[in-house]
Image 1 (cartoon, rainbow, N blue to C red):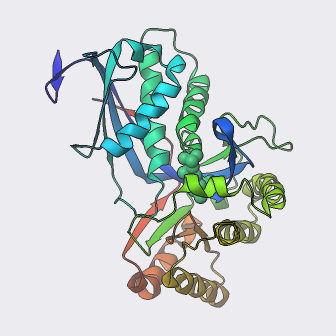
Image 2 (cartoon, protein in one colour):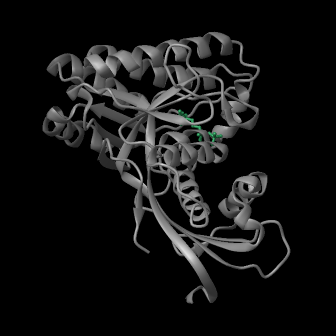
Length: 351
Ligand code: DP6
């Protein structure tokens, strides 16, 4: 038997899962990780988490016995979040009653770079756990396996359920999108060539951890004065964006993408406990993007996550000119620049 950190390992699997950036945002949720509106995102290629999950004999009678290592060191805080999630969902992973778990995880993107690490982290954990579950049971089709992984990932972190699928993924019930579900994401597969291989350049404005967590932000939507209208708007936009991705209308894409970013931050600024995550350079960068677009007619769109960093989305044919613009005009306002693009989704690795 192989030993990891002095523990005898019975079996282990390793998965790599990418992060994603939402174009239409998930902001507001109900009990059991049910979103208040549907959302649609771009899955990234380079920004990934690699996670090895190993099983060994239990040494205590605790419900979950977990050692969680991030980049080689024990991470008690994230480990506690994973443990709580596993205990709450033990029915999905009955083998955790008899086995101890070691999780070793690492990201190939810098911490606090404005890339959603919980999406890739929980995506990878969900895939690995499901893979372990099917070592002793008949494995379903790949389609069902991915849907189940998305479901399991959602229970840990909403945005993680979209990372299971390549390119573009949609999560949340939408009356006008067939097969959409609150329980798991679905792949959006009819993509015009304009949007294939979409680029995402991440402009890191601030690399400090943010002061208000996404969970706190979601809960502020519960009594938000504009919540009803916001959820309606997001659902309309998801349906519209599905058509845009099909017909290649880049101007309509830019309009939805940028308005979504500003609406997300407007929700934060207008909630009861209002707060502000944009920094001065976030606005400076956005204004430069507006100027660049109107001068060159090159279709670049910005979006924002729940943080100050800016994602620049643009079709692959404009790669050279946009990256030159970033280098010449934006890089000096940023703590870092990361070039990424649409990716092919998660992958099982050899361990
Ligand atoms: C602004 O998925 O991080 O990135 O479900 O509480 O883990 P939890 O929230 P999380 O929220 C993501 C919010 C967002 C928008 C989005 O990704 O759709």
